[in-house]
Every structure is written in structure tokens, then in C-alpha cells.
Amino acid sequence: MIKNMVKRGCAMPAKFVKKTIVLNQDYINRAVRLFHAKTEKEAVNRALEVVIEEESIISVHDEIGGSEIIERVYK
Image (cartoon, rainbow, N blue to C red):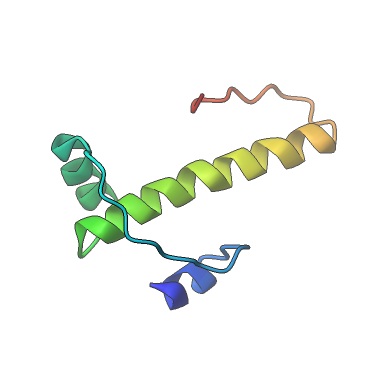
């Protein structure tokens, strides 16, 4: 998993912790399909990466004075 994060350009080193949380199984199943993930864990981690990367993109866009408005989908 860490090698995959480096390949995708994840800026922060991976620190994995075990969590017990309740998640919507339909969302997990959909994420597995969308990301072509081999495991549910991989799908959830990839979905979280997308949210973090999107926020980084919006922040840089705002810093450089981008001319278009980018809507924050995740609030």
C-alpha cells in the first residue's frame, strides 16, 4: 500500500492505524468498484486520498489566484 501511495504522488508519508468505525457498506462496495480495488481497506484509503488531494488542489488554485471558481464538494 505504501508503495502505491508513493507512485500516486502522496506527499505525506503513510501512517496506518487500526480503527473500528461503522461505515455504509453500499459506499464501500461502490468505492471498490470505482477504484478497482482489491480490498475494502484499499478502497476506503483511496477515497480518503481523493478528498485530501482535492482540498490541496483547491488550496493551490486559491493561492495562485485562479480565475475560475472551484466548488468545494466535501464540506
